[in-house]
Amino acid sequence: MPHDHLSPSGHPYRADDDTPLTYWQTMEIAVRELLIEKGHLSAVEIQHQIDAMDARSPANGAKVVAKSWVDPEFKAALLKDAGSACRSLGFDIGPMHLIAVENTDDIHNVIVCTLCSCYPRNLLGLPPDWYKSREYRSRTVKEPRKVLGEFGLEVAPNIEVRVHDSTADMRYIVLPNRPPDTESLPEEELAKLVTRDSMIGVGLPKHLSELNA
Amino acid sequence: MIKVRVHDRWPPGHIRTPAYIRGKVGCVERNLGPFNNPEQNAYRLDPDQHDLVRVRFTMDELWGTDAEHPTDTIEVEVYSHWLEKV
Image 1 (cartoon, rainbow over the protein chains, first blue to last red):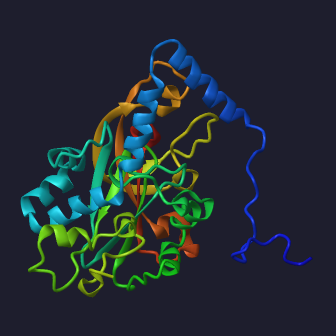
Image 2 (tube, rainbow over the protein chains, first blue to last red; image 1 turned 180 degrees about the horizontal axis):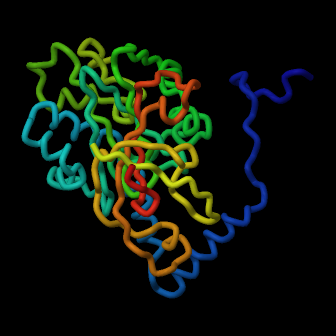
Image 3 (tube, helix red, strand yellow; image 1 turned 180 degrees about the vertical axis):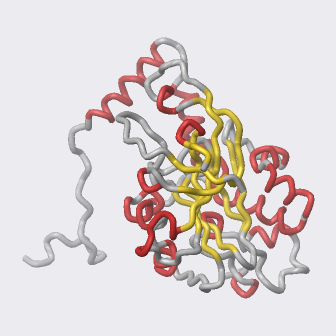
């Protein structure tokens, strides 16, 4: 029966993941239970922290970028000390040290962490899976133009590609260029143009025509 | 800009200086001030503090004739005990 392994939708059934716990999964459960038993944390506090992490999304970063497009003073503060500037907008980004790097007519910035997968989670939420892949991490420092091309972004030869390898204590966000013909757009609408990928540097903000797409 | 060379050292342990910049020369983009040394921090040793420095390298310096676009750049955070002035 050739179709035995297909679901009614025609797709293969996903394998069940009821395999034994790995060493590190067991370790995580043991540490978590000990912390709860000894009264350092409660299960509710852990759940709240997971909820807080899940609630963070690129929309937070998009508000920061949009604000920088309309408010030169804020932009100057952001480029000087991005962490303090984001806190001043009311974002709880924890102890994160943040640097904002600005795209210009001459420079295109892109972020990678070659050593692990450092990402400004406290501002952009959880990283996309590809950001953590060995391929993205190793190739972005060697052939960034080719990598960007695979994301659909061709950078002109006269524009410098500047890669930021997030190896240590800082986290990074790209300030993309403001799309053309958006001078009259209010800040809240501008924020809708700012994509996650444009803040990592593998994409550009949406065009005005894509605003409601 | 101040020119610096990254030490070409290969010690064991938790090192946050990527292999591809060791022995290479770049320019200081900015100094971020003192941070705990992760090489000690990772093992719960009382960490020394070192300035963390953002260093800008050209693709030409890092990859030579294999460079995709020699004038493109990479900026990396390096702890100052890995750097010497050129």
